[in-house]
Image 1 (cartoon, rainbow, N blue to C red):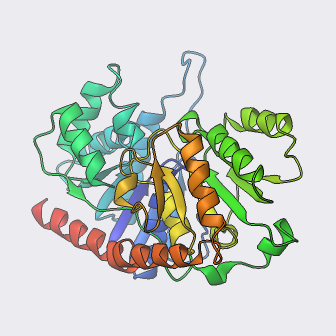
Image 2 (image 1 turned 120 degrees about the horizontal axis):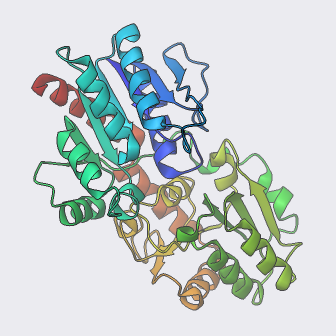
Length: 374
């Protein structure tokens, strides 16, 4: 198949999933064309089946904000015509599904089916805003196919938007060959030269991720035992986290790595992963950690319980309960095996439900079904 993929190229779950999906599809022989204003952060164009098409946005004094939605729709049509695409797959409803809807209308009567994948805040935050709710609902209902990354998000979409059409749940996934304990390249010894346990957090550092909670949890752990904290990512809450580290005099124990490629190598060095988010529609970073045999302490909110099984892969606490999270962290790291048994169970569960080798065929089958119906 010849597939066009549109996503946000920034540091976030929807862009990561879309990029990894494109890479996996190309490895299976499909022709994949990314259409966005910049190359996605994890995209390497080494393969001959992977292509990138830049959306150029015109700036003009009349426009306070460049009309990206219109420029994207035009580029989608252009790539459809020049590359003979079979379908478009857009990730994050706003504004990508609206642009795809416009592109399909411009392409008529030629068929340009498009699939919308809902990722989370496009439904729970942005799309449900009264300024966007009607157009989000309309573009979802007009999509040729719609998928959701979790059962939680499916229920939220049906309830908040009163959607009557079927939506397929296809979960996020991880390359279980790439993400493994063997991926550590000596980073554990670099960060913790005396063998201290390493706690880790990976996100876009937005308020919903509750980054400062991760620092507070670590502060409580550090009061009981030597430990190190590695923070991967960047975003608006980094300054608050840095202030908290300085306030608690933890500068020698906390590493801010910024945005990183090859995160599987970093995750494989961790002993415990912290994801204390206010809400996660899935929890992709937790899954990536689990594939690297790292137990997770997350929150019992949204789709996280579909990924992390409490007491098996790690533990779930209520959002904001740093005391409970710290108790579980100390409990795991104080064990003779430092949580290795729980980490191995986490990888078993990740392989059982979320490996790319199982999830990508589900997308391929869905593409074929939508093409046959369209």
